[in-house]
Image (cartoon, rainbow, N blue to C red; front, side, top):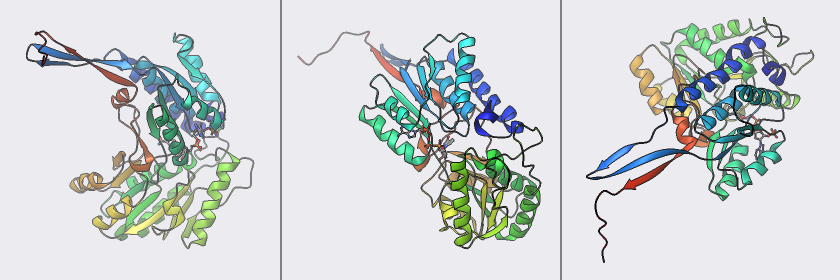
Length: 395
Ligand code: NDP
């Protein structure tokens, strides 16, 4: 169903999408019974805290991971005792309905997890509804800005999982096959339609030509084809609109002087297939190095020093993710410490297990999904002060 909804290869969707949704349901289902408050002793008096549900939570999803997003929002919301109204993207309306069906089959009472279809205006109406206590959006920065400010009108809680333009930094001493693998995973999985992708691949000068050669060689092996064929490992774009956006960026990259190393074309076959595309000689001010493309376009930028690459990596309004490839452990941690990003990797890229918090800083969002952190974003704390001593009033 995920493949029908998105066009992503079934080779991916059976291991990454349905599985990640199921992981979230199991993880938060397990966590539900462990949610406790605190006891704070204050002499004879004491305070206890209780974790309470927020009430009605609205989830609004992007089209790139319809099953995962429906579960990443629904599972922690329900585990904390909330109900949810989820609006999937109209581009991919099917999977959330299946999630709802599964939840009902598993015994979740009617009305606890609900799916409503519609375009952005339906989402906008949900946010302003006074019965709603929280909004969690996965989407683009412009939509995030609108949703966040609409939610602020009535002081609703928010989680914003928005876009990115993340750096993936490869130092001279990196294991080159791992680094190339990371760049491929971080740019071509789901045909590049992944928010945390490391689309600015900074490669240190000493290994630049070797890195580019291996990246090209390995990317040429992509099996592009029918997403329902299990041999296919690179599918089409989700829609004609998204394909046109990506082709526009590729054109811009060429016009602005980047070197096209591989791909760059729309394939002459049914569906919105764009070849995996690699640019080199990309500079920081080029459009393809600044804007989120959300397609299979990898930009290689070269660098010389650690200090330089950290400054350049951080010179973006986004802050979702970052990756570093190096065999020097101290450098790995030192560099990651200085990168302005919420979800980071050392010597791998784009793994997002449910046990780990996920989310961005700067314009990439607020709040975190997954892990125990998500509990804080789907519940609130009630503080109860209990006096065991006489009340001492001033008069
Ligand atoms: P959009 O921001 O266009 O849409 C996201 C969702 O919001 C859709 O369901 C959309 O409805 C809805 N929406 C649009 N306008 C409003 C509004 N005014 N009020 C309420 N809801 C609204 O994103 P895309 O679907 O195009 O997804 C791609 C974007 O999502 C990328 O920028 C990507 O980076 C980001 N993303 C972020 C992730 C993260 O975790 N950080 C993960 C995945 C994607 P509809 O489209 O049906 O009209």
